[in-house]
Length: 422
Image (cartoon, rainbow, N blue to C red; front, side):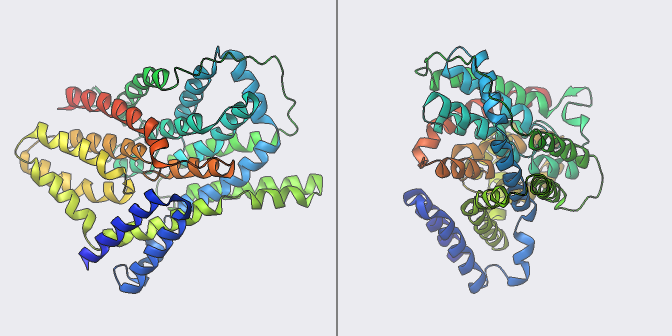
């Protein structure tokens, strides 16, 4: 059964790479086979699906639709263009802006909020938005590991290792994960300068687009604040963040309908939801649950830990770079959940501080998703937004940006964590 699950999993990804147009159907079909064949019991179906992510995407998409219609992204684009000397720096500023936001809220929500601004900039300049939107996505994934609330894997690590919000900044007299991530982010600026060096077209914007409605902007800011506050409340339900996004999205739609009495706005928002991305994520959650149930992820984790158990540096290196490779194709949430107890056992036997490997795991698993367009939910969301705009993003197109960005950021974080925590 394990071999059968592995073959199906590999086949699904091969099809996604070679025939990306039908990715949701490959994921849903593979998930259905897993259920029918018994690889994943039907009783576990609802538990393996990350409803929080799906609800967060749905609610944020509704809210972002009203945000776009308010013309606020256009105003932000005008301001950004006015402050940037050329297209290259517009892309860099957008990426850093997305990263700063992503340090405090979910990566997917960040992409859904910032990408419309990037799209507005590119439309104004008449250029392809592919490079800019991909940069926004990978930057969001990087910065998500900077704080306790920035990413699901950070929340998992904080809970498992009993770390609070401030521990990510300073822990036991030593700089924490935040500084490893931020140094990696700074190191990616020269990489982006190289990648987009040809985009030297001067930009300027003396115009200031009038904003039609400030309610969506207020609701987006309220969402950010609510997500941060919720992260400090103990024992909240798993779907708290998703519920916040959905409620605020629906409230925005309700207030707009009461004020304007225009059903077209609500219809536009509902039709603007990226159902293809939601279906792809739904299928992937089921598939990942299946290979987790089959023991494939456990086998990968155990093999990595066993191979490097004779040397702490070798083990640390394998954990970081092995996690990068695995997370490029496998959702990092079940992988991190599996590896944390494995690392606890290994470090207990070696008699070393487990936090070195915990931070190494978070560094590799979080950033590894940037290698491919299906390695992280934020990437899938970004590719989905580009497809809605008429831009089909192939694996090579994404990896031209994802690979150098990821290798640079991981290398900096890898060295920083080792020298501070070894």
